[in-house]
Image (cartoon, rainbow over all chains, first blue to last red; front, side):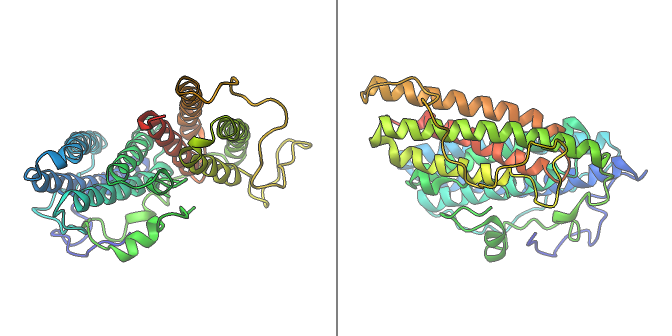
Length: 173
Length: 185
C-alpha cells in the first residue's frame, strides 16, 4: 500500500503483533493493519463533518452520510482494538493528524473525500479477508468490506455520479 | 478487476498517496502471508463448490436483469451497469485453468461472460408501469440479497486465496441492493 513512512514508533512496535507468535500473531498483525486504516478514516470523516457544518441545507445529505460513516468507522476501530487486545497484540495508536488526499472544501469535494476514505477501507478489508483464519475475524473484515462499498457508492451517488460510475464490480480489489 | 468507469484501487493508491496510513510499513498488503493454508485438497473442493454455486446465481442474476431491462427499457441506465457487474463476477468465478476440476464431467464453461439462460426469465412478467417497475426492482433486490447472504457464508468457508474474491462480489451485490433501493422507478 502507498503509505507514508512517518510512523512515530519507527518500526513494528506500534501495532506490534502478539508476543507469542503463531496464528494469533498473524491474526493480530492483519487486524492491526486494518485498524491503522480505520484511525485515518475516523480522522478524515471527522474532518468532512467539520467542513460540511457550514454548508447549510445544500450539505444536508452529505452531512448525514458523514455522520453515519463516522459512527461506523469508530465502531469498527473499537471492535478491532478490542480484538487485537484479546489476541495479546498491541493495536497501533492513532496519529494526531493525517494528511487528507482531498481538501473537503465544499459539498462535492467532501463527498469525494468520503468516497476515497471508503475505497481505502474497502481495500484494507479486502486484503485482510484472506489472511484472517478465525471465522469471526474474517467475518469482521468481510462485513467491513461490504459496509465500505455501500458507503462509497452512496457518497458518489450523492455527488451526482451515475449508477455506472458510482461503483465498480469488485469493491476493494 | 478494475471498474471500467473508475481508476483501479491500486492506481488510486498510487496517485493519491496520502490519507496517510502511516504505521505498519512493511506489512501492508502482505500481512499474514505466512498464515498456514488449510489442506489444499479440502480448500480446492470448497472453493470449487463456492464457485459453482456463485456462478449459478450469477447466471440467474444476469437473466433477471436482462429480462427486467426488456420489460422496462427506461430502467436501462440503472440496470445495465449492474448486469455488467454480474457478467464480470461470472467471469471471475470460472476456475483457474491450471486447476483441474475435482468432479469429472463438470468441466467449466469456456465462456467467461455467460449470457442469460434460455427460456422464460426468472422474474414475474410485469407491465411497464410504476407499479410494475417497482415490483421488478423489488424482485431484483431480493435476488441480490440472497446472493449476498450466500456469499457471506461462502467467503468464510473459502480458501485464503479465493475468499477475498467472493467477499468483493458479495460487497458488490449488497451495493446493488442499496442502489436499487435508492432508485426512483
